[in-house]
Length: 472
Image 1 (cartoon, rainbow, N blue to C red):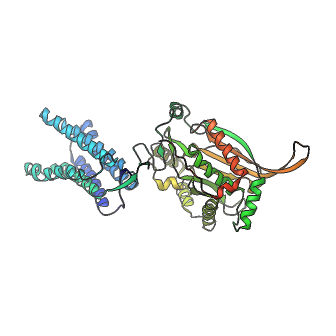
Image 2: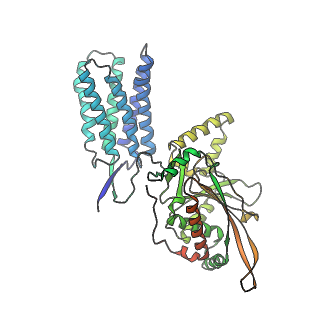
Image 3: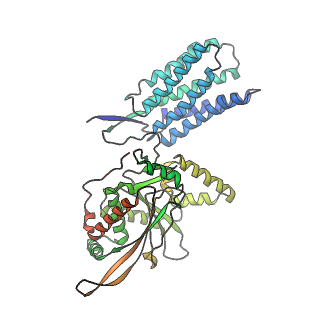
């Protein structure tokens, strides 16, 4: 089978740490040179100090946050660095020298980018690409600068550290083959989703016209008949599934619906539409104790569209028990507690910074995993409170596209066609959806499918025959 290549860093240690230290050192040396310069024009300060410093910091940031899965993002600081060298080339006396250097810098940036995005199936070309210029600077240019003061040597040392950092990175990156049909992360993807690039124009444009989730939400009031569900639950409880209930059946049905209708697992971020592929993240607020003064916390459970009902209840209950048995110091509680320590006015600035980072997909994955505002679905049970379900709004912060709320069971006497009266049980289930990810017909088809699963929940005992995938 034909294979494609993606580059990654198996671990953040050894040569990778050395690369980060060298790049950080390059920035520090550049800053020391700028401090010692008596006069710097605004243009020199912008292009010869701020630009390379930004490239250095960006490289280190990407290396630690995205090196393992999205190494291709390191092409961004490389292009910035080449832009810095290109600006320097315009100060050369010879026009020919300037043109040749510009072509060389463009070649370096293009070759590096083509390698890390997988177009070139080997990183061997990167070794001479960074090693030879470094040797040239050491063996040739250094001899021409004999007698220079330490301050005059600082820019040269900064460049050498930068080249050495890129050489270390090219030596430490590894190839990871991906079978044909597999998905390779590309520029524009986020650490929690892949950008959809084959959408119809109306879906591509709608996030720019309807800018927030709160102004793009639709409300669906639904009800589920529980005759088959009650028999299914009773059967599973007799089989030893302690605590198995309507919540688990609804979750299993929604997970199964994502296997047939992957558009349910899309989200909007930065005015673009993304898909989580086969990662379904479900959030739920729970109380550690059923009392009014008991603190709330949020659990996040990750499912796969191929999961069965047994897998759903096992993963969900494991997470619930882990939180309930933990004092008020879970990862989410610690994050909320840290934010609570920040003074109010400063906290507004921190939240604004987080929103900006989220817009551009720069939030660390560790943070979005903890965040209750990032996920595929937020579900809440009003049944445990004995009240009807609410229509809960979507959050503008984060990217949760669907909020599901279901209430307590209710009994209804219905008249059959033959005139007899029967007693049926229903549960009201309300959905609040982001209309920008799919259209109304898609949502209606998915909800009808969920109804079919609830009428025959034994389908959830076996994995789906096919798991559909969004067209990227």
